[in-house]
Image (cartoon, rainbow, N blue to C red; front, side, top):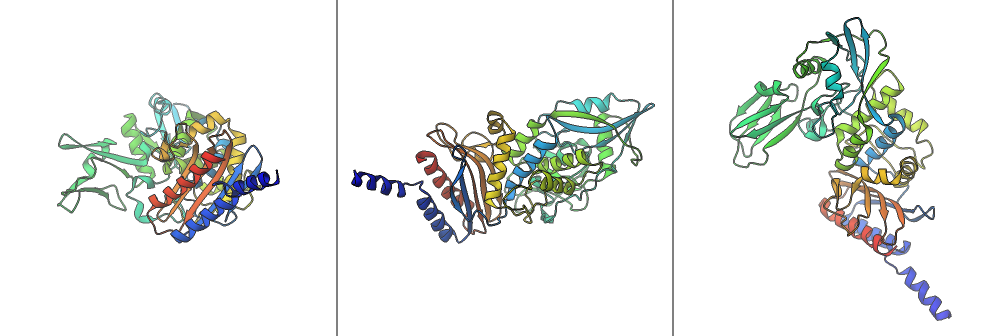
Length: 425
């Protein structure tokens, strides 16, 4: 009997998912890749940590920042997205944006409510941009990303996702919004075909070349109040005038279900939506659309019980100034899990082998990873839920910073470790 008990203890200690063996694998990977690795595995059923490895150290989270944005939105926005604040005065509609990203944005469901409301409103439309206080980019964003689709400018009243879409079709170009069709200039041939916007204005240079990489470009717009009013007027086929905001706008028009934008943000890692969610949250707390209002409120009122104070500066995670610990991310996932029914929650997240940024990885006969990725150059993270083959639900945060190896190698190592947990825990 003693020999049998000893054998069982030995087998358990050498199991591929024993804390000792997992820690050994994590330490070996950190040595191999010469990076910084943080990991924590928490058993929801047992209410305890299974493995911790550098879980109290701060890491650059990249788009794991969106988990914080997601929770803040859940707590402040309600079931539907606020689209406009407005007041009717005589024969005039005076309105301001709330930050709603869904208006004419092709990547999300748009029920047309905002368009119809403005199209059919009283004879005179007056738009006020006075409530928008956020800079176009977040702190620490890379300024030369201005031409990249993942770096749209923030605004109080977004339209078309705050970017122009240019497609090559039938030997010509189609442009949306159409008003920019005359802003595209054909340039001499280069090494590869590309479309580049001037940094300070909405002029687009189309460079032809032997390497044909794209037939469609989504190029962020350089925004200002006059451009937004002009785009509204062109879209609605109505005059839209700009006015300063002097009196309050007591009425709110709601547009799409909040889950419809959360799903795109969490599955596809949409930076634009993430930034706009924090602006909408700020608008629910104050009369100013300012990202810092939402972040400060969340830190003081929603996240004060996290193990470590988050260093949090934007909604999307584009900034490298953000710093979170793995154990705080797991603590946050616990709060999310308590706030949202499991069936609803898991359908909003990236699903291994099924949907979002992990559609091509973490595959199994039955999905076992539900979470959020985060990637910047030399940084890759994945945090969320792992449902084991035996049916246990675990929460984990796996953070890798400052590696020089290809991200695919980091991802493969992560997948191997998480797969062993899925199989054997």
